[in-house]
Image 1: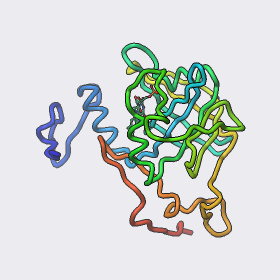
Image 2: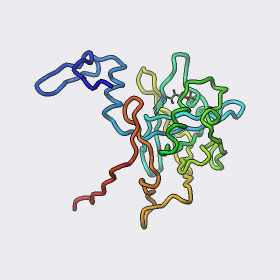
Image 3: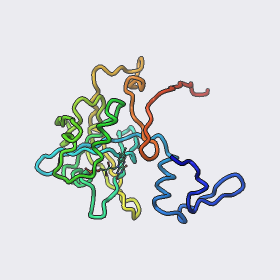
Length: 218
Ligand SMILES: Cc1cc2nc3c(=O)[nH]c(=O)nc-3n(C[C@H](O)[C@H](O)[C@H](O)COP(=O)(O)O)c2cc1C
C-alpha cells in the first residue's frame, strides 16, 4: 500500500502542510481523506426485515452515538445509482432496525455481509449467522452478538447530493450478553472484554490493544 500522498492528485503542498479545499478535489479523494482522518469509526452492523420477512444485514461505519437522553444513534446510508440500499428501504417500511456491535470474532462475518447482493438474498445466511427476532422492535438481530441496540426510526435527514440519508434511531432496548463484564459500580461494558472493531480507512480495522485510562483534570 502506497503512503506517498504527494503523488495524490489535487493535494497542494504549502509551507510544511497541505492545504486542501474539499470543493477542489474529487468525491473519491474527499472520501479517502475523511475516512482516513476520522478514525477509528464504530461500525453499526444494521439488521432489518426485508419484504417477505427476509432478514437483511449490512455494516455501516458512518455510524455514531448522538445523544443519551434519549439514546439516539445515527447511521448515514449512501444510495446506489438505482435507488436506496436495502437497509434504508427496510427501515422505512418497518420503522425499526437493530445496530449490532461488531466484535473481533465477527470481523470476517461482518465483511461478508457487506456484499452488494439482491434484496432477496439473506446476508445472515451468507455469513453463517442466525437472525433472531427482537422482542422490542420489528427487526432481527445477530444471534450470538454480545451487544445489540434495538432502535425505532426517529428521523431521516437528507445529506447533500452524494446522496446520503442520515437515519436517526431511538434506542428503545439494549441486549447485552450476560457474560459481558461491566466496569465496577457502573453500566460501562468493559472494552477489553467486548473487543469492539473500529474501522480505519479502506479495508483496515482496529481492535482495542493498548487501552489507557486517564483521570479527568480537576
Ligand atoms: C466496514 C464497512 C462499513 C461500511 N459503511 C458504510 C456506510 O457507512 N454507508 C454506506 O452507505 N455503506 C457502507 N458500507 C457498504 C454497505 O455495507 C454495502 O453497500 C451493503 O451492501 C449495503 O447493504 P444493503 O443493500 O443490504 O443495505 C460499508 C461496508 C463496510 C465493509
